Image 1: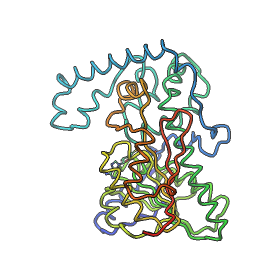
Image 2: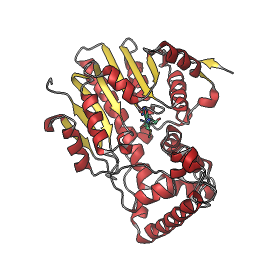
Image 3: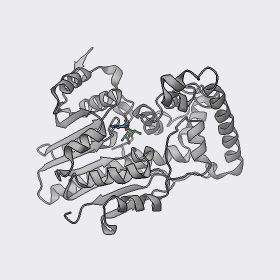
Image 4: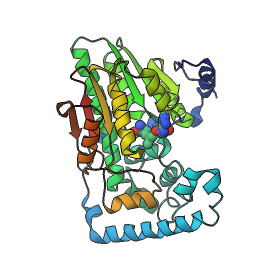
Length: 362
Ligand SMILES: C[S@@+](CC[C@H](N)C(=O)[O-])C[C@H]1O[C@@H](n2cnc3c(N)ncnc32)[C@H](O)[C@@H]1O
């Protein structure tokens, strides 16, 4: 059954507006796993995951490293044989390699298949985020193999990033509420299915139903925005969510120097950008924040052998891993001052989350 999402859609360009209104004809097919299996807000799933000893064993690293080398070779073979036409038709697909990968990963479990199919998008993140609930009990050997892949350091760390983002966003809204503020403008850039921000919004609204709050979501992926719309509906928050299907570049240039947002979140996007782009984006976001406003972002760091495994076994390419120190330097070059930046580094040390508070007017 088709259900018109009760999501406010606004756009300065009327043509785009009409296009977006059609997109928001969402159906149950747009449901993310998060609707039924969100780790956010469940006390038993909110504790940060700690590194597990099994992934530090030399023989485990040797085995997964060998598998990753094998899949790397197969991907190159594919690129110059049956995959060759993609080089001209769809360069990104060509770069990613074949969708079907390995007997040891995606052919074993549907959740792993969802990663390889939707890699770099909210579809793959959806699977990674929901894994602790879906794979809580291993019913057969396939589930056990999937557990191994979904608990590997990169995957655990990305879930920790989600938990921290949710906690920080909710915590900041609560803090503002306690200061007497009753009107809030929250922005999620390159939001994907916007799990952290929608769940934080919904939790906040349960505590303060009268709060005058809007969450604006910006992304250029229709399927991701549809998933976000469905999640907002499922959490009863859709009348507070504004969805903008557009390129971040256009959105940022339309908002530059507005200094009108309380919270800006842009997690999971800088991982794919050049240094110059990270600096430019930081400058742009800084100019959106109200004085005292908070910018929540993150940047993926090197993870030893697991970087290679994520790239070749999970098929998650195109990422620029930088150390936390390097990332900090880019935030400084982007215009934030030393005492405005705080990094939260979780146990795996792979996804540092940055909190930048605009303390001084520029
Ligand atoms: C890895 S996902 C991150 C999703 C989400 N922020 C999260 O952490 O779960 C990156 C998102 O960036 C979006 N994206 C990539 N380039 C973009 C652009 N130029 N403008 C807007 N969104 C973009 C993609 O569509 C995708 O949803």
